[in-house]
Image: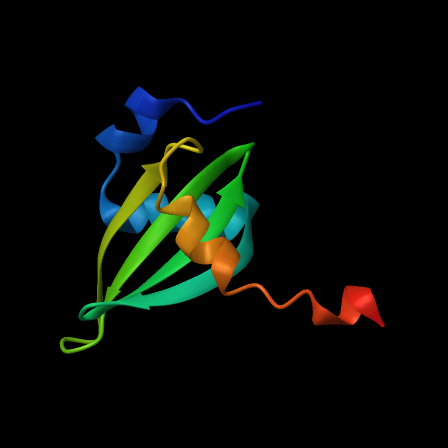
Length: 85
């Protein structure tokens, strides 16, 4: 079951975080400019949480299109070396 995009974006950032807390699974994080971007999956969708390093605040929670090239940024950081032992 996929997230209802209209419902998701009608929620506040705090409500979006609650959705992730309830049904999300952490995948990976990257550092990009002044942000840590945390990637989660929830109900079959990829979700990004934008954490501002300077202010120590979460600024946004967005659905990431799986066709977006940015998804590759997260894949690069995944260590799969244990699979080759």
